[in-house]
Length: 255
Ligand SMILES: [Zn+2]
Image 1: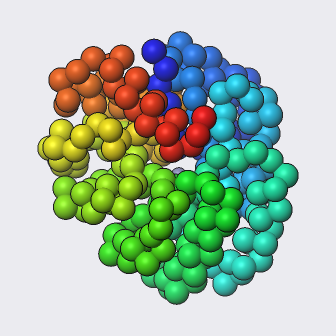
Image 2: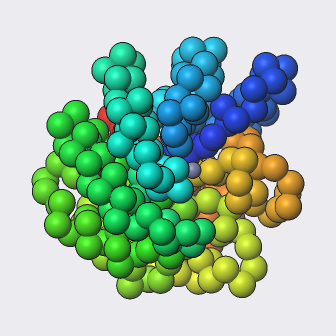
């Protein structure tokens, strides 16, 4: 059994011993593939450092997180861009729109999102979308940019069934993480109505820790609790969840 964490910031742990222990716990829980999104120019070297240490398990992605889009967003993008050509990367992400924390830079967030979609189209890479309190804004960009090559993951999906279907119709996958284990989040009611062929798993570590570790820092090894909950909701085995969602991730990332 191989589980794929399609979204983890494990590189935030810079203590090499603690990192080694985290990677060991991944192995013990059959989490064999970790896809890493940076968030800004400062996190690029941290991410590649982890990739260099664990090249068989870690797959880098590159982008500018919407919460890191401020006045100097163009300089930030210019600082990230060279790395696109210096390394093999597997997606542009995480990119998108976040209006939960701050609406000040909405215009800039949309501009940065569109520009990075162009990167993805040029490099024929999938995109990994961060969307918070901004579904309509993100959807409008995706509708306008839609073509036969644009594809990817709607990371940390927590929306309605109607929103899920709109995303799937555009050819995107839903990234499902720890929120599915939270009582009252409602995702457990929606998810079984969605074919698992449209779903990938993620932790978004160190955030959004699944039950039974909710409230503590998250790590990729806890993907097993997400997989167990998804298996319970679909009434299939964890092995089947691992097989289907890892196959989905292979289709997206080409690896
Ligand atoms: Zn993230």
